[in-house]
Length: 114
Image 1 (cartoon, rainbow, N blue to C red):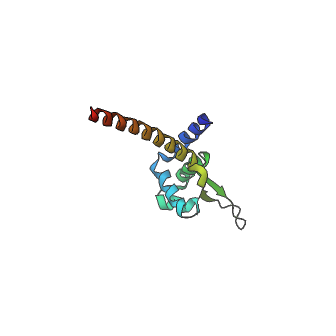
Image 2: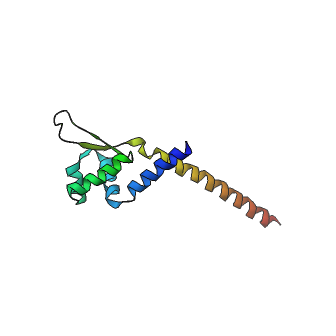
Image 3: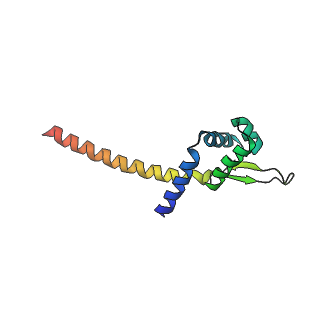
């Protein structure tokens, strides 16, 4: 399970390492959008945006839908659960850091008493 979570965390961080993809995630955070709209908003070409969207889709950060009224169009939206593995990983790190800092604090307090 932890190994699978690690692979998911790696994919998400890899996808978010690019500033354009982070911008796309921010844009999709407000509402679903079409690829052309995302390309225009980030000042990238449609083929470049297509590659960015493929990375976000493969990482499980975004999904696409085809509206019934226009099967040629694709609308992209964020997957809310996509960041859960990252959040779990960060929470585990925080617990470990808290334990380490607590241990260090107790050590310093014992030394002060001497």
